Image (cartoon, rainbow, N blue to C red; front, side, top):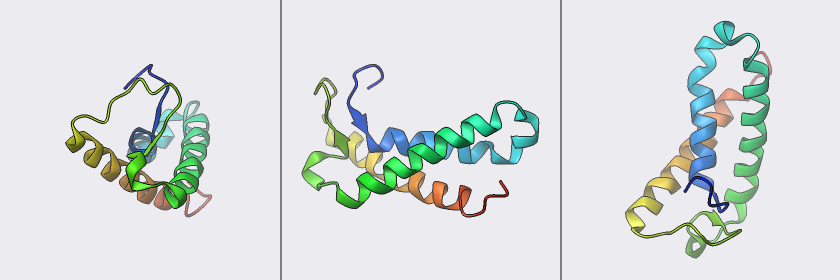
Length: 99
């Protein structure tokens, strides 16, 4: 999917999840953490907006170039799960501003 320009909610969710998993190491990422967190928060806002309005037949994709594929559909199901997990992880990550 990388470099094909279509926006998969699942990959956005994966990005948020990766930053959430780094939270215990934030002190060791002193310089990078604020930027990582800011970008993850932006991705989480995108997820919130898109998950609220996405139609199942769109497969969790905001089509831009239509160069990525939804075949096999098992991958699409996995990316739906990634989108939801990323949204949940973001809710936890951004629940308090003390992070």
